[in-house]
Picture (cartoon, rainbow, N blue to C red):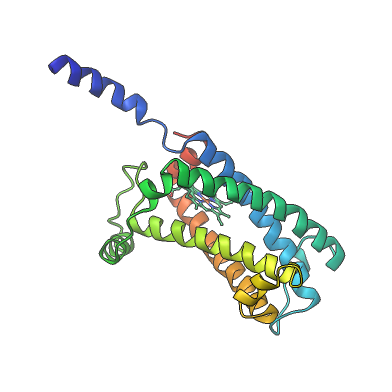
Length: 209
Ligand code: HEM
């Protein structure tokens, strides 16, 4: 009995070493590149027909003009969609989403937000996400699905008119697409800042440990 538990405790540290499996790291960084390309080319497309009374500075857009930006947007779209579908499939099939992102409780989120704001949130165990991380990651996955679907709805409003109708029409789908982009940019600012504040989490997303 004692030798079994001794074996177990000896094996545990080695097994606990992998914090982010390789597939998560690969799809995460492909997603990050695709998202940045989509956002920067999207801003250039927006500038050709702005929804609001502002445009994005050319210095942060991609594509040079409407035609060029559309080429970038549609090229990166395939990367984002195929990679995103792979992440969703593997996340569901391996049980990762259930294990790492659920459950999300109001008490948990409130408690961890308070702890974070008072500097008491522990980052000792990187293998489990705290409730704020769970909420942000689950939320951004939903926003990621919404931005692709609303994008398809405004790209093919004739062929996919049922999808465009689900959003309440072309004009509404355009606003949904824009606000999803704003949510992703907001997420990205917080997400990157937190990753830099806890550099060992960034290391784990690069080398796994
Ligand atoms: C380029 C900037 C980015 C950096 C530096 C970065 C960094 C990280 C790090 C360090 C983690 C580890 C999680 C942790 O311990 O909290 C992580 C996880 C995650 N990131 Fe990012 N990230 C970036 C871009 C993005 C983008 C653009 C998205 C989506 C729009 C995203 C979505 C996620 C999600 C959903 C997870 C959880 C993955 C899982 O556990 O399955 N990240 N990121």
